[in-house]
Image (tube, rainbow, N blue to C red; front, side):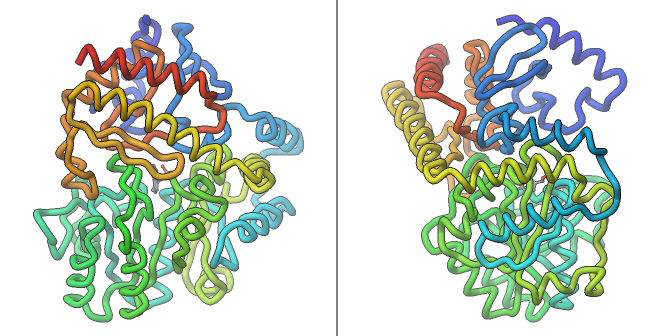
Length: 428
Ligand code: PMP
């Protein structure tokens, strides 16, 4: 496949946009080469500016659970656009989508809409701090919660007590309130809570991690976090930006039967428009302005285009009794197919999967946290990525991302993908 026009467009973009992209991972830094410029997308496929058709396993990094340009979402947007795009005043639609989301997700009484997953997580932390009157938070190495300052902290070696910023611009003052733990390591979390008595406002976690590849929680991990939070008066925040409305109607809380105190959403909840949300029981949500003292706001929050897209998306998910079974079955089929191919090749690999999230790591050891995710053979991943691209299969341009399976994928698409994996693996 040729990507000449994409390369030209990227060169032009680099002149006027830092790195040519509006979000860093799009720039192919991890895999080399130049990004693909998209012209349009429909169902399971992307169509690029060179006229190539690609099977899409990223799906806008998660939102397109039902495929690109899903008709009910597109017509809802068109219909609303004719009536004006933003008022900064309440609309009935906001109540409708809020009520629907609350009916689908366990343990939440109220929900506040924002414009991105970053905003959702940032606001959830402020709310947790205001509610508990504590400053510190615990996050896990390898989990991503958006780009607000408190979260851009990387683990030092082992169980470091205080985080150090991994982006210039994040102050030491902010970093010292973010404590780092290893994913799937309860003992580590317990030590941090005991070393900081009555100081930890919240533990924020991706209940199934998707930002170091797909890393599911080990048996007992989420239950253990729940118990530790309850024992220490710390709030448990599930960042369900990836997993919400994807792993079940009610996200991981429903799928694994564990109650969080605050839940963050993004991606699927906006049907492809910029939407995030955070939600909790009344006692916590009533701490938020204008009812309570914790401030949070947004000019475009709850705007009618975004709410129309999100509402159409959630309705489609809510009305479909077998959606999650289909998604799981398709992902399991892909898993099995790739497993056979990789096993036969003799290459070291691990495939992690939960529901419609799956990732391939080029290392034979179990991938359960950031350190084990980093063991993967990145050079092999780069070749794998570019090989698949040549075959017309688009996976994330980084070894640290999950693949997102959509309902628009057919079994023919999956067979095509497995055959492409077989061909590429042979050439590695
Ligand atoms: N939380 C998680 C788990 C995410 O995966 C992401 C984005 N990939 C975010 C938060 C941030 O969302 P956004 O990019 O919409 O700001």
